[in-house]
Amino acid sequence: MGALFGTNGVRGITNSELTPELALGLGKAIGTFYKAGSRIMVGRDIRAGGDMIVRALTSGLLSSGVQVDYAGVLPTPALQYGIRKRQYDGGVMVTASHNPAEFNGIKVLGPDGVEAEAHVEEAIEKYYFSRKFREAKWQDLNRDVAMAPGVIDEYIKEILSKVDAKRIRKRGFKVLIDGGNSVGSLASVRVAKELGCEVHEVATDLDPLFPSRPPEPTHASLEKSAALVKRFGADIGVAHDGDADRAVFIDSQGRVQFGDRSGTLLAYWCSKKSGKAKNTVITPFSSSNLVEDFLGREGIKVKWTRIGSIHVSKAMLESGAIAGFEDNGGFAYPKHQRVRDGAMTFALMLDFLASQDKSSAELFDMLPKYQTEKIKIPLTKGMDVGKILRKVKSKYKGVGKVVDTDNDGLKMVADGFWFIVRKSGTEPVLRISVEAKSRSVLYDTMRELKKLI
Image (cartoon, rainbow, N blue to C red; front, side):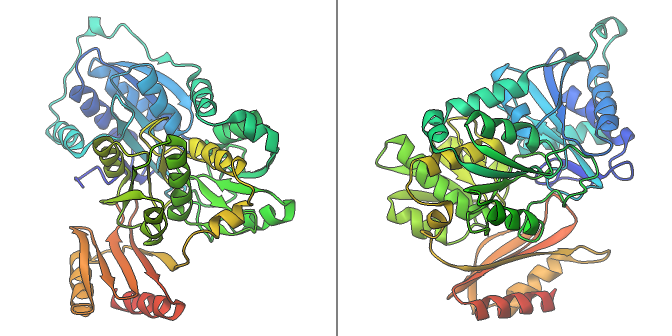
């Protein structure tokens, strides 16, 4: 991670850390990175201050001599699809994704819609800190920001073309959609209705303050929606994060499922849809062992990668994988696009359900059972992450072995359990994930890690 960019863009508290001045400078730096005259598409989610940041950002982009088209308020994957489909040179999404309501962010996207790689972010940071921006001559500033209408319509049409719409409509599913008061509401509700579903909507009104729940869909934040799935007798529930690149599912018994569980089922379905005997899927080291347990039995190769959606996207391209997913609910279906896409993930789950004679709860029950717990610990001033990681490694030396590590975290695997301790690249927290075969080992390990930290 750089001085500005984390694992997924630049993020900070709106108008305190992420200010108009920062957005203006980043706009100039991003514009300088691209050639003069390049076409850049910009969009935003519904967060407070988003319009302020967009205006400052686009001013900086224009001043560097690039063309800017504004797609408005829409999900990140819709913007990503629009950039690639309409052949833009790049794009910028103003979003803080799953971060708390007070945050906002700026995410740079390449011509394929995929998040910018590290070398691109490093170049942009260099321009930003050196202040060596390209300044367009006045006579080249003769094009205003133009609107880019219809992006979300094209995006939804493409999603519907990737599933068996006729079979889904025939089933007449009852679904619950928790939009989290943000842009996932603009896509998934329309997708469900187009597919003939009876839709129960929760927090699908757009509200910049996210009054219904925090933007990150977790077991705790989805308790009410999970109860409503059972009350309405829904076949499946889905919840999105702030920019709708994630989809977290609630099964027909009202159980919230981690993203590596839903990702495993959908990867299995993508393999069946491919018609090939051998397939590969991509997932980070943070995903459960159940991924390989289940998919390996189906002859599907699992390729593990570093944590972060950009690494999943890159590995999918290199290996020709049929799918890539993360434990946070991010799922990418490369036949649609090679990025996380909440509405596409939801449509694929309906597609899978329509092909089966089982309920969503029965499908999830096909997966191996592991005990899992995930927590976040706020990073306080003076907290030394490196020291914490060294302490953890020392404590578990001889008990387990490190299978993945970087400057911000480590994964330790031992007999009967594994854990990850890592600094988040998107918010000021330390993330701890523990998985074990027994509940007692799970709780003992989590308690010990919290004590060490």
